[in-house]
Image 1 (cartoon, rainbow, N blue to C red):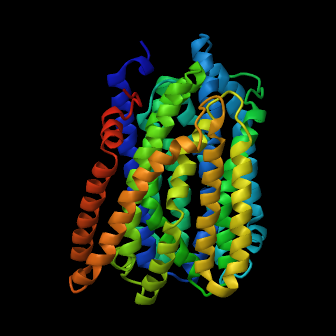
Image 2: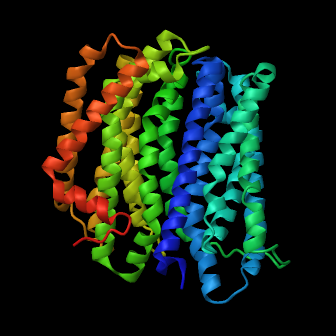
Image 3: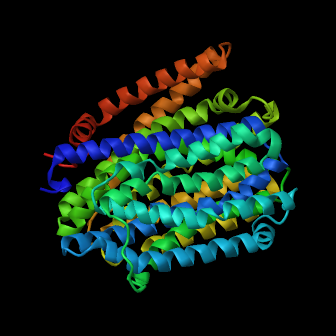
Length: 506
């Protein structure tokens, strides 16, 4: 009996994955808070965040998306056919590692050009170049980490792959804490490099136990590059929103890039946590699509959208209403000033407008990558959204500065989400936009009620300490949100909670 047919084992593996992914996300949030406290919103933090685009681009391409979608099936087929997986590793890993090393070296050598192209107006380009050369190592490390993760998941080993972001963020935090007085922001860049090494190290013992050391063999390219292309294109285009932000933000006031980054990272915390839902249930969606069970696939994706939507919208209302207090409590320490708090809170409110769109894209894109030949549709949708983001930002920046960039980001990702939802009429799912209207209504009504509650109670809480205000305000808004959800759609909400993660409905 496989893991897929043992619900208890599946749920245990899913729970461990969810806990470790959640820990990694929280540590990543703590890493950002530490950066804000030590470096504030400054020329140094701007330089680091330009270099940060290298691992930000490599992670979705080499860990979260393309590598997993391509290599898990490759290793799984070898196991099902009784082949020696070590032979597959011997035939694929040397070629892949050589390519990753070449790209890492090219990124390090081309760091001056990258900085000039991505952030031409940055205050300290020399520091940005130095940081970029250090972070370029993550291309190699992330690729190897993604490779090991795929092999372990194919062997139904989930703990080590889920722990990679815990190891990564602990490495960054440790280097910042120990070396920031000596090296400044270069300590953070060194931490990124060390964190990438830790991602590989935390998985290697499990890889040796489960797969074994690869046997020597002639190299052969077994990775289906035709299937890799649409996933890679989607991942890179999705990251293109950050490129737009860094490029246009580099010509604004020093610290604008950092303020936008902090605002976005805080706003994205509920989105990242809500997407654990889709991460845990993805194997079931793949099996449903592979088996041609359209009804089960449709129930799965609707259930994921409902659950993730509830989580992110409840958080979004609190982020909008209490943005200044949230930023003040989390960031206004050390080098992070009161002016930084005001700007970051404003940007966060604008970014939050696109939070649901980000969540929908994260949930729905998985449908299109379930089959053996992934479709180009998500990449096309993301291209349209990115064009809207870039065009809108270019027009808005002269009038609204960084706020225009944040608004353009929200508009572009929301349009992408709508396009992806409209495409769910594909045979694998057969889900129309009209069928999602009841779900949208059941999510919208409690969101509006909670938002109005927050607006009404905020003046009465104004004299309280910021942390007390947040606790009381968020609790009251959550109470109204949950009560309204139960009133407007009790059957749907109760059924969803009872059947997740199976997706089965009466």
